[in-house]
Length: 62
Length: 241
Length: 258
Image (cartoon, rainbow over all chains, first blue to last red; front, top):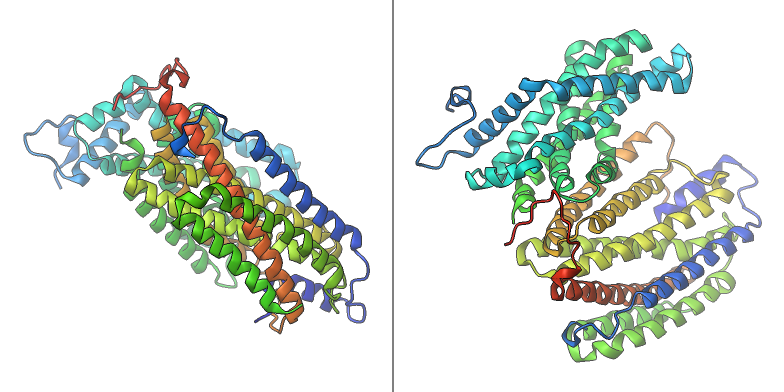
C-alpha cells in the first residue's frame, strides 16, 4: 500500500520547516471537520425524510 | 462537394443529400441570416470591447499588471461573448419552431450540429481578431511568439468553446431560464479549455523560453477532439422528439 | 484493530447491496439494515478515528480529518460514476427509472463531494496555513461540484420528463468526460510550483480505520441514493399520471405531442 498522494502537501509542509515538522494541536480543526460530517449526514437524511414519497405514490414504483 | 453557395440555402431534391452538404446548407443559412442584419457580430464586438475596458477599470491603470494578464482578459472577453453568440444562434431556431422545420426537411441532426458549430466558431474567431488590436492598444502587449502561433491558439480555443457550447445552447434554448442555464452549464465545463487557451496565448504574447506551448496546444487539441466527437454523436439526442 | 474487521463490514455492505439488487422482495428491509450498519459504522468509525488511531508523527492529530475526508470523496466519485453509467444506459434504453437513478446519484455525489471539499479546506488551514490552496485536487474537486450543480440546475429548468431525462443524460456524459481533462489541465497549470512525490507504507491500523469509515459511508451512500431514487421515481409517477401537473403555459416552447 503506497502512501496516499493526499498526504503529499502535508509531507511537503513538514519538510519546509525542518525541525518542527510535527504539527502540534489542531484538534479544533479535527472537531470542526467531523462536526461538519455528522451535521451534513444528519441534515441530508432529514431532507430525504421530508421529501419522502407520500401515500399517493403507486405501489409498483416503490 | 457540391457548391453550397449555388443552392442559396434552399435545396429540394428527390434523393437525400449528404451529411456535409446539409451541414454546409445549415451553415450558409445562418450566415445569410447573420449577414442580412449583421446584428450579432456588431453586438458581440461591442460587448467584448466593453468587457476588455471594464477589466482595466476594475484593476486600475497599472500597465504592467494589465500587460501581464492580457491573455486572461482576452479569453474572458471571448468566453462572455460566446454565451451571447451561442444563445442567439439557437434563438433563431426556437422562434417559430424553425428547428422542427429543419428536422422535417429532413436534415440530419448531426448536420445541424456541424453547421451550427462551424458557424459559431468563425464568429468567435472573427471577434478575437477584432479584439487583438484593442488588446495591443489598451494593454500595451507585444506579440513575441509571432502572429501565426497566435492565430493557431485563437482558432483552437474558439473551436474548443464552440463544440460543447453548441450542444449546450441547443439544450438551454428549449429550457426555461435559458439565459441563466447556458453559462451555468458551459463555464465550468470550459475550465480546461480556458486554462489551456490562456496559458498558450500568454506564452505566445510573452515568449516561450521553456517550450511549454506544445503541451497546452495538445491539451486544446484533445479537448476539441473529444467535444467535437461527443457533440456530433450526442446532438441528435438533444433535438429528437 | 485488525484489518479484517473492516473488510468484513465492507463485504457485509456490498453483500447486502447485492441482495437488494438481486431480490426485489428484500428491498423493503435491506436498506434499513444498511442504515443501521451505516449509522453504527460512522459512530464507531468516528470513535476509532478520534480516539483509537495513533497520532501521526509528522502531522500530529490533524490527519484525523483524513478518516472522514477521503471516504467522502471516494463516495462522491463512486456516485458520479454511477451517474455516468446511468446516463449512458438511459440513451440506449430510454427507461425513466435510469433517469431517476442518475438524478439520485448526482445529488448524493454532489452532497458527498461538497462535504469532502469542505473538509479539505478545513484540513488546509492548519497544514498549509490557508483555507484554500490552488492544489490540483482541491481545484478539480471544486470545479467538479460546479459542473454537477449545473447538471442539477438543468433538471429544475425542464418540465417535460422525457426531455429532461434525455438532456440530463447528455449533460451527464459531457460533464463526466470533462473530469479527466480538468484534472490534467489543473495539474499542468500548477506544474510551475514544486510538488513532492512521496511513497511509503501506511500504518495497518490507520488503513483499517480508513476502510471501516469507507464501509460505513458506503452503506449510507447506498441508503441515501436508494431513498433519493424512490423520491425521484415518485416524482416521475406523479408527472406521468397527471399531465395537468405540468405548467399549462409552456408559452414559446413548442410542445411536440410525440
